[in-house]
Amino acid sequence: MTLEQLVPSLEVCQQLKAAGFPQDTAMVWFFRSDALNHYSWVSPRTKTSDDENTVAAPTAGELEEWLFAQYPFVTLAFCHDDKGCYVKIGDRGYQKKKSLDALAALVLEVAG
Image 1 (cartoon, one colour):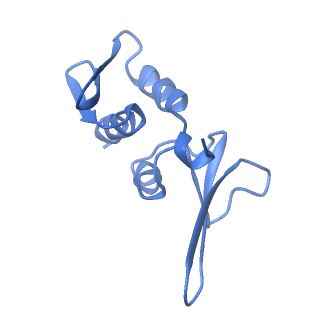
Image 2 (image 1 turned 180 degrees about the vertical axis):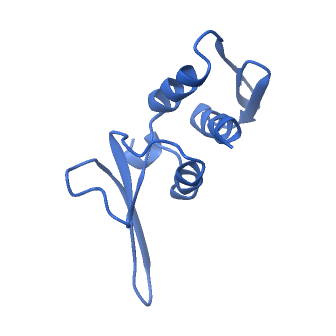
């Protein structure tokens, strides 16, 4: 398993940032572009990680912590079946192939 598999995609993380998700996660996406290529990778956060070419890369646990901070007295429910994972908190829920993607979608809805 790679670090990139433990966090949402770069595009989703950029959406989370735009929605106001905290940028103090344990890992970050680095991204660079030149005239021919676009490079991106996940790395643990360091003191030099906070620049315009990084965005927070939250793990499932960090997404859950954020949801619990928004809804401290509500249960976060996971249901796995042949279609993937359904995640629900309160009256909001999402079905995705991976629980990480469902959590990210739910955070985006709550934050937005």
